[in-house]
Each structure stands twice: as structure tokens, then as C-alpha cells.
Image (cartoon, rainbow, N blue to C red):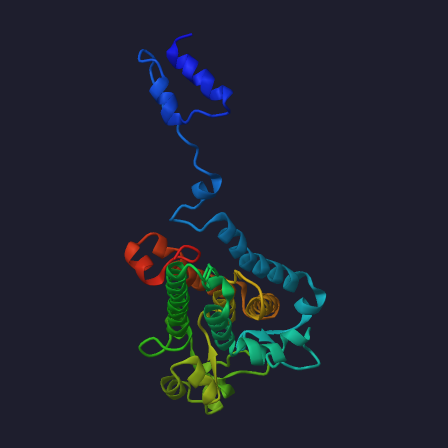
Length: 333
């Protein structure tokens, strides 16, 4: 045994463990060195910047799963399948005696005061999280470390601001698709591009079918004049017309998915309970929409539109440093 081996043996006898650097120093000069790669942890390996993480994919899978389950239920349920579907209103005939469920009514309390004003609930949930949730607050309570406290407070303000910036970006996507986009919103534009227009109520028969041109003229319905006057779905309904003939992307699906797409809650207290309540109710109403409203293709395009919006706000910043500087990445910035 040479001197280096003796030194290593004495170190082990004292309870010391040689570090990698010390082992390299005592290695005989004639022996070739080998470099061992440290395996990348599974969590880091799964966090590629181009796709969502496994947890994000698992959460997102809830949305298509609810739509698939709701679509299958609407076909297999004798009550729902036997009910008459009105393509003009994208729902079942609104006769209380014929409706297959309370949730099939467009006037149910959840649809009127939750879905119709859904973005107000999203605003309240995100606002309470950004301003009140302790998960974004200072991370130290040691009053003796004033510098650390100041740094933590600045970091908390920074994180809260990033939450509000991401909310503003998602709100912009919601407004552009459903409210206004240099004129009619994108969803209304796509409806017209696919052949839809605003028809007078007299243009439809008792079963909700569009009358022939001769019958339309006999009824005295000036469809062209009304179509020019009412260029959006909201205006069409306001003047008593019916939005019909094109592909109507499901605004319900878009709003419900977009509003609950980042429903992860950290921290406890009232804000956490409130946000969970909003997300849970949105998921329930998404299921009701899947069962009772819109065609499967309209719901699919609504889901895709919401997915694209969420991807732009939450995934793209992982790819583009400039976008990350503005929007940040949840959990990291």
C-alpha cells in the first residue's frame, strides 16, 4: 500500500468520505479518468419548453374528456336523444314541458348568472388570487432580516403583477374572439365567412327550419336589409333576428375552458376556496354544454380556440425570451 492509499484509509477510519475532487487528486497518474454523466431528474426531463408538462397535460385532458362524455351521454340517453334539437338556438326546444333537463334551459340560473357573465367570475377569481393569496406573498417572516424581507416583498409584488399581466393577455383573447375585433369579433366573422347571416324571425317555420325564398317573400321578411343592419350575433338578437346558416363556434365551451384552463390553486384560505368553487362550477357547466348545447363540431372548435389562447399565454413564453420578460412563466417568474 503506497502513501496515497494510506491517506485514504486513515480518512475512512476517521469517518470522512473523500469528495470527487479529492479522489481525482489521489488517483494514480497512470490510470485513465472516466467522466460519469449525472442522470437528468425525471421532472426536469419532462419539462421541455415546447410542450406542456405532464401535469399540465393531465389537467388539460379534463376538458376533452368532459366534452366526449357529454356528447356520448346526449346520444345514449333516451331522454336527451328524444328531445328536439333546434339548430337556430343551438339547443333543445325551449318548451319547459319538453326540455330533457333543467340544465337544458337557457334560462336556468347557472346559465344566466354564471355562464353569461362568466368573465366577471374569472376576473373576481384571478383578482382575489393576485391580490390576496398568501402563495404570492413574502416568503420570510424573520423580522431581523430586513434586507431579505424587502427582497421578498419586491418579489411578491413582481409575481402578483405577472399574474395580472397574464390575465390581461387572456382577457384580450376573450374580447377579440367574442366581443370586438376592429369591428365584429372573430367568432362572428368566422360565422359569416362560413355562410351564416342574420335572418328575420318570420323566415323560419314552426320546426325551426328556414323557409324557401318564395315563402320568405310571401311572409314579407326582408332578409337582406336585416342582414346588413345586424352584422353581429348580439345585434341580430337585439333586433329580433336569428343568427343562422354558418359555423357557430361554441362561445360557451371557449369561455368555460379559457376561464378554468389555469385553475391550479396554491395556498389556503378564502381565495383558494373561492377559486376552486369557480373552476368546479365552470367544469360542471362545460359538461352541461356538452350534453345539451351546440353540435360536436361547434364544441370542438370552441375547445381548439381556447386551447390556442392558453398556449399563447402560458406556453409560448417558455420559447421566446421576449414574451417571457412580459408574461413570465407561472411557478418560475
